[in-house]
Image 1 (tube, one colour):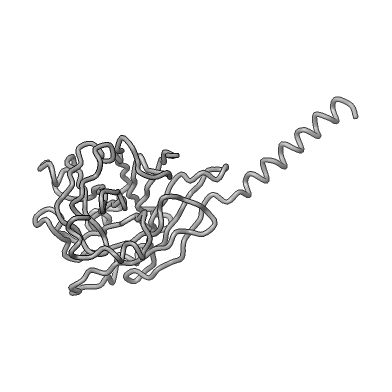
Image 2 (cartoon, helix red, strand yellow):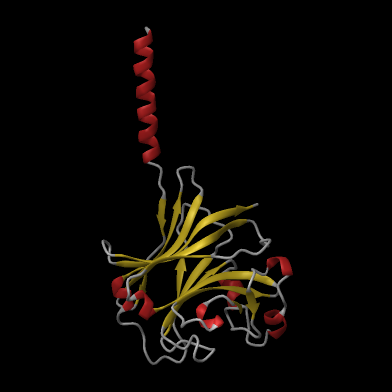
Length: 250
């Protein structure tokens, strides 16, 4: 085989290799769940090597309509992670609709979604009881508490306790609540990550990205976001709340 033939053979191999790379799946979607008049689901994106780059909850625009009203206990929709991709430490997600918001009054008492990205299983979450005050109030180790975050007293059954962002406008007194990022804990461990966003803000069809301040150390190996994004896709008429720009912790 002459030099020219070798050159073209190498080009052909390179082309075929690129074609194979394009076939690598990089978007994995979880099962759809009925929310309002629409649907919601989870999405994991990976790079060509299979490394996770983001984890999102997506919902179509109809999910914003026909949401339950007048319920004493706000509905919580359980969203399963996609199959075919491994993304520790995440186990499942709940999309919680709060028609009248929740405490504290004059801060979070407006219609909004709480999106809980849980590290624990549903069985473990269901085991969190109303009288678990010791576990609710057990502090995080200092190295696991993100800077300018405050552990609040008490907790919520089947959920956990909340660690709020002191830099958020609604907490610092610089503005009202549109979206924020909260940590969840139980028995001295971080058990969920929680973006919160008002329906009023979603209806502005936003595209905002905000930093997720990190603790000095994470308690478990896995992928953790350095940013989160809230966005509306006009072409697909859908909303997304995304944990993105992961760091890998071994």
